[in-house]
Amino acid sequence: MTPLERLAEAKRFDMKRKPIPQRHYLRPVTWILSFPEVWLRRLKITRRGMEGIRPPFLLLCTHMAFIDFKVTTAALFPHRSNYVVAIDGFIGREWLLRNAGGICKRKFTNDIQVVRQIKEVLHVNGDVLALYPEARYSLCGTTAVLPDSLGKICKLLGVPVVMLNMHGHYLNSPVWNLKKRGVPIACDCFPIADAKETESLSVDELNERIRSAFEYDEYRWQKENRIAITFKKRAEGLHKVLYQCAHCHTEYGMHSFGSRIACRACNKEWEMGIYGELGASKPAEDETALITEFSHIPDWYEWERSNVRREVEEGTYSLDVPVMIEALPNARGYIPIGTGRLVHDMNGFTLKTDGLFLHKDVSSMYSCHIEYDYKGKGDCIDLSTLDDTYYLYPKEKPFAVTKVALATEELYEHAKKND
Image (cartoon, rainbow, N blue to C red; front, side, top):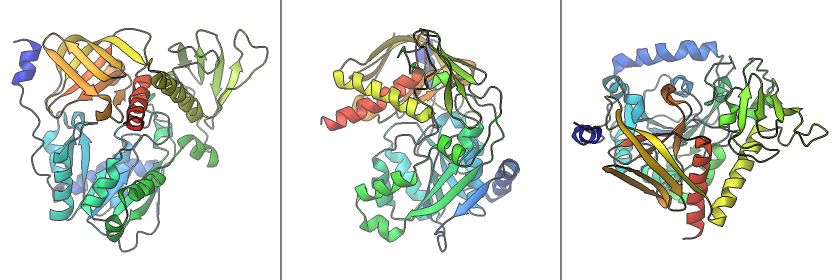
């Protein structure tokens, strides 16, 4: 049987099963798995305006690291909750996750079934529904793009909407280097809208409140709270996010080591200080003095975005690269498909291989999910339909999945403006 025949024969994950209220016998397990680590990290929970708010309600959470789920459990104590979880989180533990309250979702797909399950949790079971709408760990410690549909969902549900904005999780283990730094953590829990406001406010007004509540900047928070990170390899992996040299503008020539990030093209280096700021530590070959282009890491990231936006506006953005493909039809594991070709351009994503064709239009994806060194196999992009998720590992260098994520967002915004 060929890989594509195996994929065709594979039983798909049952997305239509009703969500299971978190089993009472598993609630102590979730507490045991959560509280020791959050205590170790000296979690500080600040609640504002939460008096009188009881389940059912929708809890919107920021997303930076795996510890997010443990902090959410602690912040909701003693209430139980259901969680929307990506399908790869169910691999090898579907029974456990379902009974602990997990609801499966394939990332960046328009899945009305998930909305039905959320309504079941809130209106039938009377529980809390925890949602992480950024849908991936923050790449540079700032808020990811949020879908316009959030306001519509809140209005449809008609229950209180509560925010859980977490701090320190990204700094403790950034997605580009998961080694823990021992950073203290905190979270702010406060209402965005009560049930009456979800009915009276417009979708735009709800989205404005949600986006305001989601604002965070981990590096600013680190500086303001004087949190020193002395971990010697604190910059290793940062080039995954800062893939374009801020001095010579060369793409894909950055590398990082220890506490430094550097460009192979012009040989300029920057030092990441213990408070998260960058400072030039070695001039470029054409410089006579040390000049720091961006001391704030998110500013460098947004500068890269502006360069991608320019390519999109000029109609010149394009990627055409061979990829290794793995498919994930269910929670039993990945099916290796072989090699194919991924094109990402002004028309969206197109994946081709013998017997497989997938096209994702620009307007169908407001963002995309990427991973750095996913399961030791390399950086990857994943694209989903309602039935399958494909993990794509580019096989040519130079390359940056971060640019693909930025381009997906900018292509979507460009298409929206030109509708």
